Image (cartoon, rainbow, N blue to C red; front, side, top):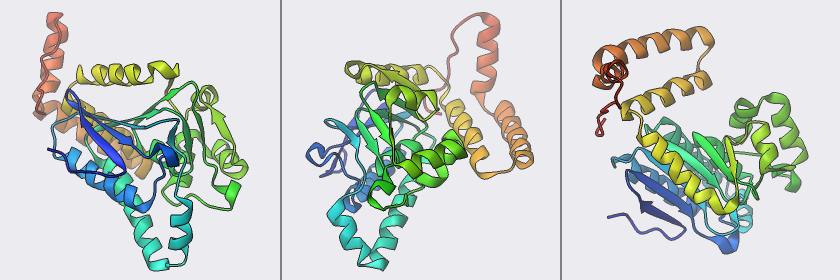
Length: 264
């Protein structure tokens, strides 16, 4: 039984979960209370056996960013503001270090903190009506939840600077072109496509999914030589100790579908 949340919803699907920002009247703000709830929900998900998590918003916004009144108050309380930023950091750190695959289903406006949430996910699928960008400087703000660092790594230095400096919001198709999202679908098909993508993942080895995410994320924190050496060590252990690695090869040889472990 899930905990009770005020600002978000946590739904359990078939071997997956859905996290929905659920304050559509406020465009799903990522205020401190919501960030704390997201941390609690991610911790709850981490204890479960789901393989994937869909992150989305209710209404016409994925998330338009922070809460104005909340920020004004926090700016006057430096110690509390530092705690808020640390909660944001811990939330996205937990998502990135998780063995679960996080999929941003971007249903509408995705700005500032909303963009930072998207960037902490592993894959992003956007509705064709979505508009996505940093937007902080439009109101004299700066990204403080990892946006400046993850955005550069996602789309390159020049494009990241352009988005940050101009505050421009990209139409979904352009966001896909620059690599900010992976797929764009008609808005009416976003939920179905997100679920279909989860189904694609569930055909794969659970332990393999975790390993692929881990290896890709190494490039965020290591130089090339160290990353290559750590890849060798990780793959050697995986290939020689994980049953799914051998099962995949045998299935290919036998021309059949692999029978991967579902509890890996």
